[in-house]
Amino acid sequence: MHQHIPLASHAATLEITSSPRFWVRTRLALRDLGSAAHLWRLCWTLSWLDIKLRYRGSVLGPFWLTLSTAVMIGTMGFLYGTLFHQDLKTYLPFLALSIVLWNFLQSLVSESCTSFTAADSMIRSIRMPLTLYGARAVVRNVVILCHNVIVIVVMDMVFQVWPGAIGLLAIPAFLLWLVTGLALSMTLGALCARFRDIPPIIGSVMQIAFFVSAVMWQPNQLGDQEWMLLYNPFFTVLEVVRAPLLGEIPSLAIYESAGISAFVICLLSALLFTRTRGRIAFWV
Amino acid sequence: MSATPPRAELVASHIDLDFPLYHGNARSLKKTVLKSVTGRLGDDGRSRVVVQALRDINFRLQPGDRLGLIGGNGAGKTTLLRVLAGIYEPVRGEVRVSGTLNALLDPNLGMNVELSGRENIMLRGLYHGLSPAEIRKLAEDVASFAELGDFLDLPVRIFSSGMVVRLGFALATAIRPQVLLMDEWFLAGDANFMEKARARLEDMVRGAEILVLSTHLPNVIMDWCTRVIWLDEGVIRADGAPEEVLTQYLGHPPGE
Image (tube, rainbow over all chains, first blue to last red; front, side, top):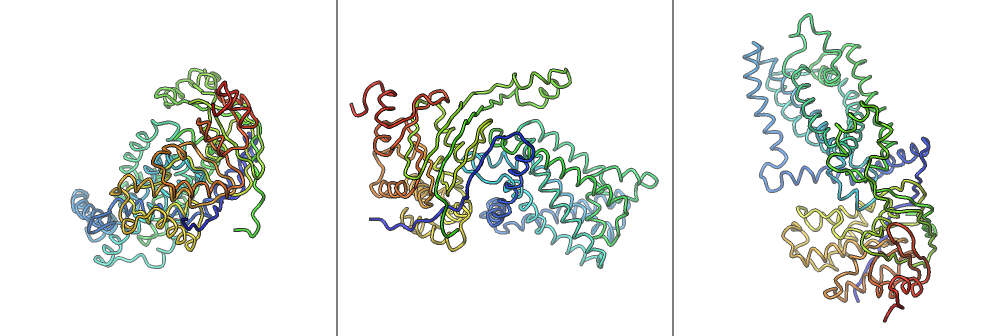
């Protein structure tokens, strides 16, 4: 006979109630969040395998990300530096930081749209906390960001610009990005699963946002109109991480605007997720 | 892993499930926006195309119960299994499963053909919340059963179809639950079902305290089950001992 080592499955007691009551739904949503936190090892593995698979068989592997970002920043830096009459010594490190951070935000937003639909076969064959799929999109993009950070560090070394101790202010702001990113990934993931027209809308919004959010140009180039940027949440959210890394302390108004945006996204996400959690399996 | 696992129990009370069908036009944002703009929002609930997949499903299973679900295509057998596994949440009613649960619904569950056999085993272990030590045990068990040898470290893409089946089967049957939900694919294809695989599956089924099996093969029910529910268009038509229900279902006593 075959020899078999029985393994126990760890799934605990399963309780599903279809109660429309708010607190029941909230409890189920919180349980989803909690059990996803328990599965952090799975989340990390899934995210890492996503990237590994994309570059399997290539010599440079994920460092293709670093290389292509470097080439893009190099070309765009010279082109726009000349067009905008900027000093390349300050413009190139600014652009490297800007583009790397913006690419992170932009790909996080666009991949959020498929956080659930990309995992449809999993969702339909095993009960897993849905937060797991949302977190996967965030973790994957953080790993990509880590590869691109090399470009920023090299630029800063070449041009001898260091943010100094002010740069540490970027850390709490980045944590805010991660929490908001998870909220966004859950919200867009659910909305895009239900309404298939949303991803293209998100795509064009992000494209416009790229041009109006002072990614390629410096905020002070707007002159007297600089105040208008405060009403652009894409800009303020970008600025709370970017400014400290450029050695500047963002103004209180910028923190307020970014904080309010993040709060609104998290609140919407919490409300939407408690309402739609049980329906997502039917939508994907 | 608690020292004493809870006593297994499965309770389904008054389950209703509507399966929404989102057609190309019914699910678009334009439709929804236009509808709310033209003030026909109240219509929304009724204008959505819904299949009544399950209606008022009620039963309770204790340790030792082996329930067979029988019924034609589209009767709701697989949907009910998915509800019991917690994948689809019912519109009304409650599901409670005490004890560990494993649902064998999709033979290639989560299998990524680009990943190596070993990576697929590791992922499956992680999905079930196993520790690294347990995953090592899982890999040994699966590798020895599926007889993959050196192929274990190669991508599943290059496996022969027989090897993929062996890997999928070995993975699915390696994790032993208290409550086992099983779809009929698992028993289908008896002709080339290896003796070894049958023994392993029987071992797993015997080890489970509660079994829910969906099939439309009467002989499978007679072999495995102690109770049968006949589902017809999402409603329980009959519930009772296998002989009795199968006689009603087939129109003649089973085995004739």
